[in-house]
Image 1 (cartoon, rainbow, N blue to C red):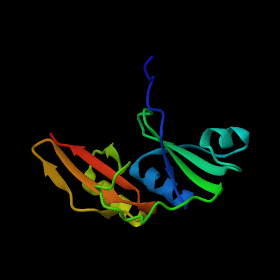
Image 2 (cartoon, one colour):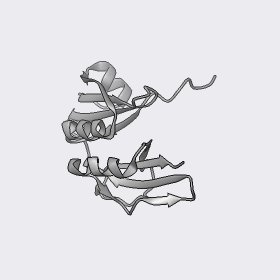
Image 3 (cartoon, helix red, strand yellow):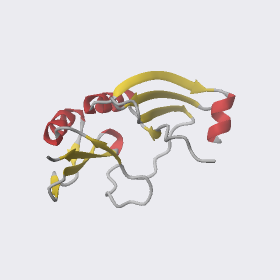
Length: 146
């Protein structure tokens, strides 16, 4: 048996509205919001008393989604500073293809985005950069050249 597809990537945040605004400005579409709680939520997370507000945002092509989650209970726990370097063990970024990397960075700045380094050119193929946004989330951006 094989997997059918990747359904979504989940990110736990403190400020759900700010995270939604950031990813919508990036070009994702808000698919919906809901509160998740009860026995099924407890069973699948292994936590007791789960109450979580979630928002699903999807890429314009409809193939990729992020689930943004704000835990009401139990309270979310911090795993360390939010300004971790790019080479930290574990999940460290989500990358998106964009049509204009400089414009995208400029639009994300008012939402708290900071370049980790600078926009770099890989051969004659791509412009690449990493930006840290709300909640310390690192987003990679790639603009194909030519």
